[in-house]
Structures are given as structure tokens and as C-alpha cells.
Image (cartoon, rainbow, N blue to C red; front, side):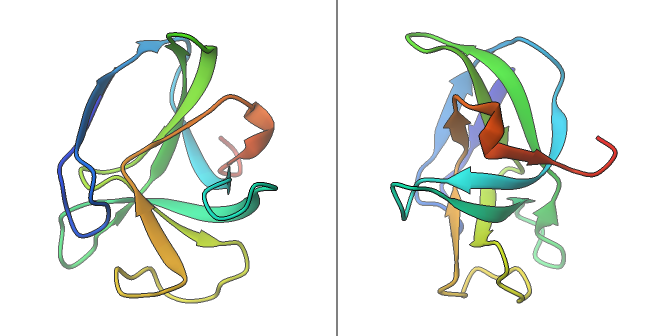
Length: 120
């Protein structure tokens, strides 16, 4: 699988990565982020695109082989990466909200840090 995210207003980092898939991609609704807290915090997650009218898209997670780590889970979204907000924040997705932040992608090693969409 390939992940390509261009530099954009959601995340400053552009990436082009290649991973060996270990299983199918699944729809993701929440992820435990360690970006702002070493203990981690549950966050809602969506994919982010360059569509001005409807930038949100489905966030996905896929098991992959990661050199040096073995098996891992890559969280990915649209061409502008993924967008996160802490669980319980009840506001629309927005690039200007101080309660939200963007990432090009996330790489996690523990499946317990993922919450899939219902029925996924």
C-alpha cells in the first residue's frame, strides 16, 4: 500500500510512504492519540481531503509490516491526511478549531488503540 499526503492546511508534512499489507483496511471511528498526552486520549478521527465543500472522508486503518517494529497499524484518510478531536468535543470538523489537529498519517503498534466503525 502507498500513502501520499501533500503539504496542506490540515498538516504541514508531506509524505510518500510504502507499506507491506498484512490484512484488509477497515473503517475507523476513534484512535488513541499520544500526541498531546503520554497517557493517551481517545479521539474521533476522519480523513481529510482537498474538497472545499465536504473535506471529511472515512478514516481507515490497515495492518502493515513496519521495518524495525514488525506488525503495526497505519491510520490514513484523504489526500490531506486525517483530522482528530478529543472524544466528547461536540463541534463540526474545521481547520480553524483550536480543539482539532491534523496528521498526515498515524502508525500504531497496539490494536487496543483503535476503535472500528460499528459493523466493520
